[in-house]
Image (cartoon, rainbow, N blue to C red; front, top):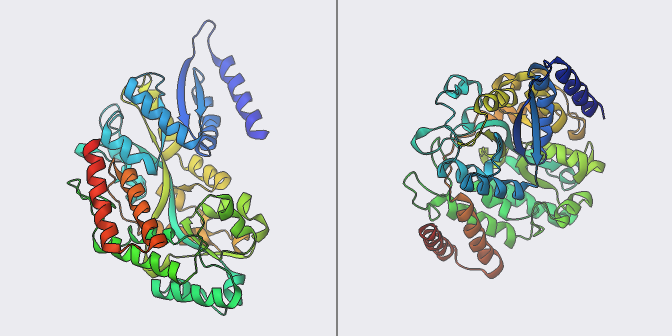
Length: 416
């Protein structure tokens, strides 16, 4: 209730500050959960310095939001002044146009870009090197594991992280000794390995000329490791975010999960609150570094109040106090480097057994490459997952699966 009351008080004070007969401007903001909560935090402070502006926040479910924004940009109807974009949709929006270049006047993104985690700007850069969105939060990749289950099998953290062969071997030992699965799905291994070893500017599925890269050594290794995990019987064969997935953690049936740092908050708050003190965070196996998601803010090219929109985005992304407050309340790891230097990162996390895991996540964020995103990444990912399913469920040969994936991707891209 307190944030809501504070918002109402600020709104009342802002209204009292207006001259008689003055008309308030309405700044429209479109977001999805839980990023909308970060916007609400910003509104609390922003309203006090903008008494002549009313911020209207519209929240839709994750997929519905991105569908609505696609339609709004295409038609020019119901466009917000400020729109949220998740990392998974970034290529679709930044490469297709419809968003303002935040480097060109009246914006000054070029001057403030060095204040942000280096890998966040590559994905937000569209054709012609134009920066189309500003990062708010990031998800440095980590391996979360149940320390008690791992210890029961006579294993250590190093057994999980030394390299990928060691990780698979640890899974066999864990399953044999305890009956517990090492991971929820073998697909998780594919998701990591297709991102491992890339350099700044490289793409996951496409090169800079738009050619599919799904038959490269990265994908062969990713498919091979996923198949090894499935054949070893160490994955529970459940999809992330399904009921079976969360129940696997609650019922001590799955011992590890590779995902963004924000998973710690989800585990604590709703997935497995009873596991407090039992979970730990470790670096990804084999020295891999990757980012899981991240949230961005953008301004549609046909937005009505661009100067105000940019001012609000600066608060969301460049205000240290705002970034830290979102971090404390929502576990949204800040994209702003200055916020990453706060003493808060060194505080122990009770849910993770007193581990100061935020320092580990910060170290990982400094090693993540700035990848190029393509407007067809989502299409390619769906096709690759379908072919991996054929490998895992029907033992389709990996070279043929990847060749078929390339053909299907080229066909779909031509159609679009």
